[in-house]
Image (spheres, rainbow, N blue to C red):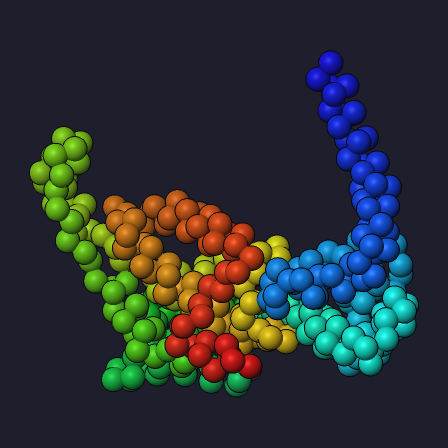
Length: 334
C-alpha cells in the first residue's frame, strides 16, 4: 500500500510539473500580460532571490535558446538577451529595464560557472618547485606571515612555524594544488594583521578550567597533561588548505550562489572566492575556540559542524557571508 501511495504521489507531481504548471504559467501570462521572466524581474529585488529564480526558469524551459542561455560565453550575453526579448515578443523600448535586469542575472549565472572552471584549474595544477613563480609565491607567504623572522633556507623546519607538516611545504599542496597557496597568500597579503593574529593564536595553547564532570573522567595528572598538551593549537597552513577544500566544495555544489549573487553585482571572480576563503578561515578560527576541543583529533568533528553551520546560513536567499570583511570591502560595491 505504501509503495502504491508513493507511486501515486510521484505520478501526480510529474503531471503537475509537466502539465498543470505550464498551463498555470500560460494563464498567468494571459492575465498579467507578462512572461515569467518579466514577473521575476519586476516583482523580486536584485540579488540571489531574483538570479536563482531566473536561472531555474531558463534551465527548466522547453525552448533551446532559453536552456542554453545560462552557458553562453560572456561576450555573447548581450546578443542572447536580444534574442530572448525577440522570442518573448517584448519591446525593449517599452521594457528597457528588463534587458538590464536579465543581463545582470546572466552575468552572475555565467560568471559562477566560469569561476568554477577557473578554481578547478588552479586546484588541478600541482605545486612545482622548479617553477620560479610558484617558489616566489611560497617565499612571499613566509614574509607576509613572519615579517620579522627571515627564512634561513628554502628547505627548513621553520616552515612548521606557520603550520606546514615538514621542511618542504610543496608536499602539503597535493590535495588542493596551487589553489591552496593562492588562498593562503591572498589572506596573508590582504588581511595581514588578521592572518598574523590567527597564526599566533593557533600556536598558543589555551588554559582550560577543570570541571567536575571532566575531573571524574581523568586523574589530575592526566588532566594537567591534556589541558596543556595540544589545547586549541592547530597547524595554520594545513587548516588553511583544509578550509580551501571546504570553500571549493561549497562553490562546486552551488551553495555559494546565494552569497556570490548577493555580493557580486555582475560576474563573481576569483577575488570574490578568495575573500570568501578569508572570511571562512577567520570564522572557523573563532568557531574552533568556541567549540573548545580537547585536542587536534577533534578537528574533523569541528570542521563538519562548521560546514553545516555555513550551509544553513547560505539557505537564506538574502545571505552575504562577508559584507563587512576587510578583504572584501573593495569588492562589495563593484
